Image 1 (cartoon, rainbow, N blue to C red):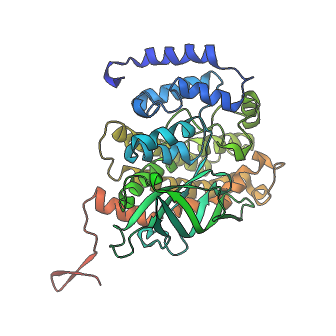
Image 2: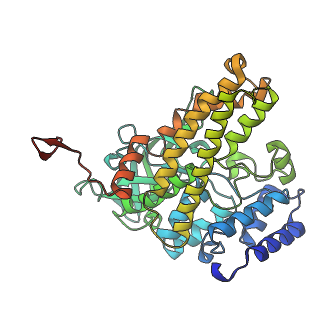
Image 3: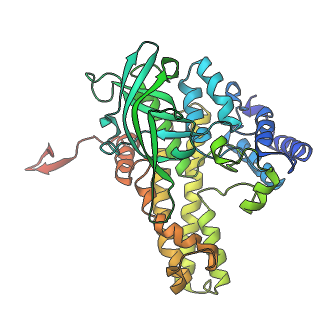
Length: 418
């Protein structure tokens, strides 16, 4: 399929007619995701060779909009579609694509990301988890932390050091690690929100086949950078496909759920984009609590709306660059950095609108406690997925062409700061 010969209105009509024919709330989630995959609507922006349609960003947005308008849920949420799939169709062998992509797109397997370590977060290349070759397998030992969805994951995107004598960026390999084995211990990390969205993962002589090395031996850093590029764009609101309806995999218990019940429980057919959701929430609350006439509230709502729109278009730029095979440069990093700014503004604006009630937690409060949880979670986006400081460094180097080392003028000379 070629984007240049496709009429957006024809695509819109095709999706609309298809949804009218095939959307059925009586199906199970697993059945619906399978139908969505077979029609190649789940991630229409993916290449045709990877269960997509090769659509542009604009056409993929039309697909998402029309599925939403029909009341249909989108494909699986989570890191499989967001990170693992794009990484595998970019770097994986044909056999690896055949093994993993189908179960990612139809939601039969869930993925987590096993990158960060207690002593290797922003400086990810300092990771200490090691992999030792044993015949046709690798034996993995180490510890990972801040793992999203680790408790329900079937597979993990794992970085491990396969050549301890190589420079730190050169001796790393990227594995698809089976999580359901004796050598993998997943422990939840309780947050101040009361939830446990993240886990720490202890790996003690876990085994993985040599066929599960993605992108070649000792080439893991290049593969990881692909994953991180998609992560930054995704965290900044540039996800692909029709939108995540629910988390995949058998451990979540959602696959056999009636898909119509999923729509009712979520209160919407798909989840809102990272950009725009907080503005709509705060705007509605300001009207409900009669705060919308306050000039300071209105000014901050306008600022939030403007930042949301800037972020949304920045994410679309990054996605369009990837779809056309171009380097996105630091666009994804800009998007991620902007999301941190939006989160901080939301952290301050939400409680200001609620007033004293913002100190109360629970579903019985105005807004159902969503604002309070957002406020408590606000520090996280400026840290996970690469801290704000790391994003600024990358933007300076890749986007602005600045040197890695800082310089200061001393006696008329530019000297490197040690």
